[in-house]
Amino acid sequence: MRATLQRYRAAPGPPAAVFFDLDDTLFDHSGTVCRALRAVRARSPVLGRVPLGRLVARYLGHLGDLYPRELAGRLSAVDARNERFRRLLEEAGGRASGTEATELAAFYRDTYQRSRREVPGASALLASYRKEGIQVGVITNNREQEQVEKLEYLGLAPFVELLITSEAAGVAKPDPRIFRVGLRRARVTPAQARMVGDSWESDIVGAASAGLPAVWFDRRSAEPPTTPRVPRIGGLSPLPTVRRRIAEWRGSYRPAADSTSTRRRPKE
Picture (cartoon, rainbow, N blue to C red):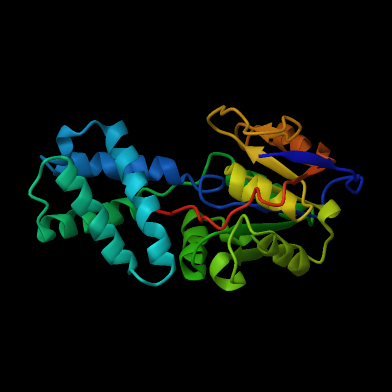
């Protein structure tokens, strides 16, 4: 993926609006998946034989495979979850009966919901922005109702002024149009705002396509796919350091025209 610097200076001082991705940026989605699958292993003799790391990897693989059909309405969320566990049981050498897959899928869903946690420091960071009158927005690829419930469960809803979902916007990250929806609703220019997210393609490249300065939330110290000029943070605390890192970023880059895609990152 080629990238060239977009020559402009962001507005001086703190941003007027800061947008965040939700899953694996404010909400610890990956950790929740691991906790739920660990409980599934303890419940299922068949899946209990599969190392946790491999089980997580296979689950996420099936999630990515089925998620486009789910979003398109060709598969319900329940049926997609049942199919994921049918595949997991079959791969582990089980009989993969429909009843067992359905029971494990329901148990996983219940455990996942109860195991949800914010990424450490998320609520404190958002609260600090709102206390100073800085708009806080969430731009996320998912259904409106699910993300509203998630924010409320995590206790983050009081700090989020703007929620832009792919369902409501009609487009998904990395399409630049969803970021422009956020900018319009916040009534700010790209230079007055920042985007923070964990997905290079969806959050960083997508935001850059809309001219929005983006900060990469890289919890796993990954190698950046392209230009090192994009700043990164490894966590949402300590608060002064994270806020300074976000505010100080003045540039952006314009990715090549063909560097974005419509591929949507799966959830749950």
